[in-house]
Length: 236
Image 1 (cartoon, helix red, strand yellow):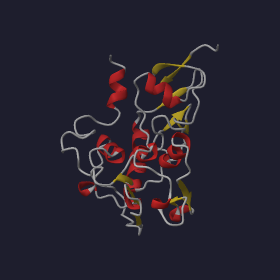
Image 2 (tube, rainbow, N blue to C red):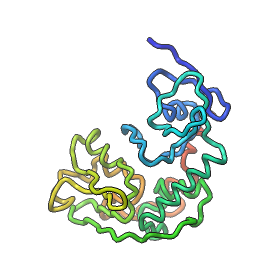
Image 3 (cartoon, rainbow, N blue to C red):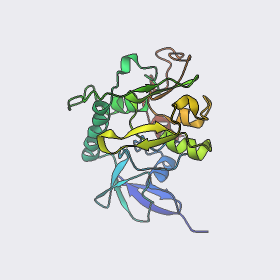
């Protein structure tokens, strides 16, 4: 069996196992690297670029880049923080996110990242794209206005649920999440309990009739910032 090795993240020595990515090794060491497209138990896509770090001076996505002995990783530097702030702000302006009215508020990873990075308002103009909804499913709403094209529902449906419910269509600004049925989400084998619904980090996939079930102040990110579970694990 191959032996563990070490590399550094912001000057901190981190131990890794062969085959681990930078993100996996960082999580195990209690170092939080922000991410959106990489969900728990899902295959990494490297598409959101929020987890971008500098590896020996070159940008790489931490969720896909294998860790290697002696590599020098920069994560929590001002340059990387500014890079991530820009990406998060662009995700807000490229969609239609009205947090104060959204059922996902307080449990939304995009909103939580904005709070963690001190983003109160984007620096870029809002695009207000025209996107449609799909309410054809009896138990799940597909609200494309909030979609950030992370691909987590695509991966979870295929890898965890064993279905091919979601897919991407179009290119560039016309890219959007679609379903594998001409008659909409209601014609797919998706069930409300599927992992694909839970995998959505924002308010794009919502279970019907359960909105606002958790009071303000008790939601996931009301009292603890996103990533604190990873950081606190290193202190136990």
